[in-house]
Structures are given as C-alpha cells and as structure tokens.
Length: 76
Image (tube, one colour):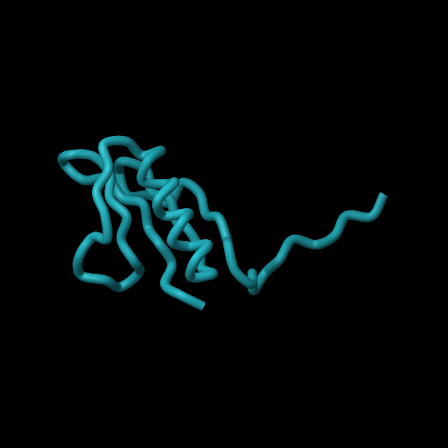
C-alpha cells in the first residue's frame, strides 16, 4: 500500500502531497483539479485521498486500496 495523498491549500491554489513528504507532488489552481490528481495517484498506489479544507481541517477521505475498515454490508 502506498502513501496517502493529501489535498491541501496553498497561497497560489491547491497542492497534492504524499503523507510525510517534505515537498508537494503537484500544484493546481482549483481544489477539484488537485483532488482528481490525488485520486489518480491513490488508485495507482492503492492508498487513500485525504481532502483538507482551507483551514487545514480534514473535509473528506476516499480509499482506493484495501480498506482496513470497510463499511458493513446492509441487510434489508
């Protein structure tokens, strides 16, 4: 399983940064573009995308690998 990819706000737009990396992987003018790039990387690495708000709070997470806590099947 690869590194989780974080989508974070920067002064000039949004960035994708691998977890515990010192440098950003890529920069994008919009959050949507950064999310799409992070998603591509996460699919390739079977990891998770962690989307942050402008204030750095986590807004959402999406898993693209083996999820250690998959949702329970709902029985009708």
